[in-house]
Length: 190
Length: 93
Image 1: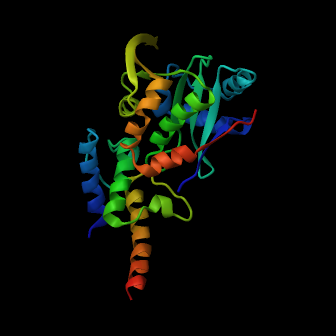
Image 2: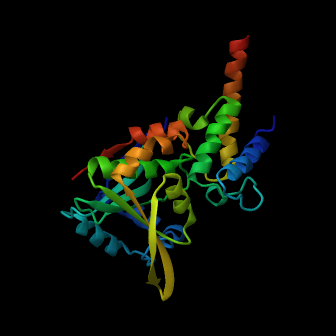
Image 3: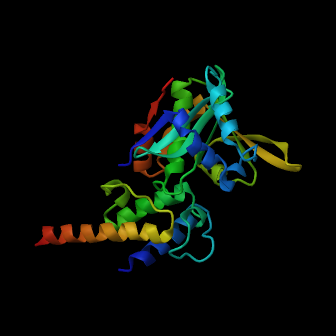
């Protein structure tokens, strides 16, 4: 069974993350599509220190970095989350593992009551995924990105709904994926 | 049994099941990310192939190597099929 770990981002991970974040297939689905420079990346990393509202993790598959999982705007009540797989060579179904890990971490570790996810309307894979996981689509908003008006779908999940839906969702997913996600470990370095 | 064809046929079945659409003609060079199957689709594909073939290379590999193209995906299954078949022959003899 592949092993999955989520480790707090460290200085040594910055270039890996920056290279992924600058990939067109990833940055085109973000609010900010700018190419991130090395200096910007270091400044961003420094800004994370002592910031209790943001947590960024590197996702390791069999000890090899493959993606990122992050939580932002964390309050006692809620948080936003996002993720991406930087590597193309991953265990088939890794996206599901990230989705499960995000829900479990937010509700069990951050202890928030609501988790939110914003998805640009043309980014279809996370929309399918959120539907499978029975997220609630809570309307939409528009943003202007590089002069273009873009629709953003707003998804939410409450702790109570996840407790109710969890088993229903898990029977739709191959058991090995659920098992690997539940065995995934979060390592916080700071 | 043509393993590659089994994989391709099953990809089409899974696409139908997950209401997704296979993009273009599947070939060895098809990038899995661009095949039209999403994460759930691939997870189901691997589970279905395990039911059909009685092995799952991704949980049995000694050195984990993950595919990015359909050709590599097939090669991983082919490599383990040889091992799997030789074990089965040993058990039968």
